Length: 203
Image (tube, rainbow, N blue to C red):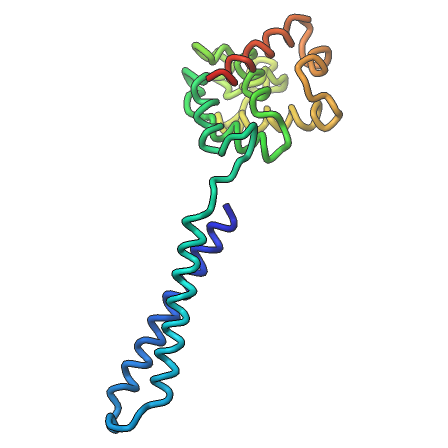
C-alpha cells in the first residue's frame, strides 16, 4: 500500500516538474531573438522528454503491481468480504475493521470473528451487550451491568481484539483450545468457536 502511495506522489511531482519545464521552454522560445538557436530551450525539451519517460515508466510499474496478499492467500478486500458474509445485525459490514485491526495486532482474524460470533450471536441477531453497550466479546467491566461499555462499536471491536492479543495471543495462547480454560467456563466453547471458524473459511 505504501509503494502505491509513493508511486502516485512521484507521478504528481514529476508531472508538475514537467509542466514547469514546458512553460519555461515556451517562454524562452518566444524571446526577441527567435532566429538564433536557444540552447536553454533545447535542454528544456530534453528534460521534458526525459521526465515524460520517467512518468511512463512509473505508470507501467504501477499497472504491473500485484494486489498485496495479507492473510491466508487473500488480499485485504477478499478477506473483508469473507468475514462480512458471517456478520449480521448490528455488526454487519465490520469485516474490514476486524480484518485490518486483527492483522495489525497479530491476531488470527478468523478466530477473532469466530469468538465475536460465539459471544454475541451476531451470525444471526446481535445480543443486548452489542446493541446497548458496543461490547462484542463479553468483556467484564463497568458501565453496562458488570460488563464494559464502549462509546462506539468500532471502539468495542478494537478493545476486544486488544484484549485477545494482550491477555491470550501474546502469552502464547493462539488457538481456541488454548484460550478456552482462561476465557470461558464451558469446555464446549472451543468446539463452538472452531465451528464458526470453519463456517467463516468456507464462505
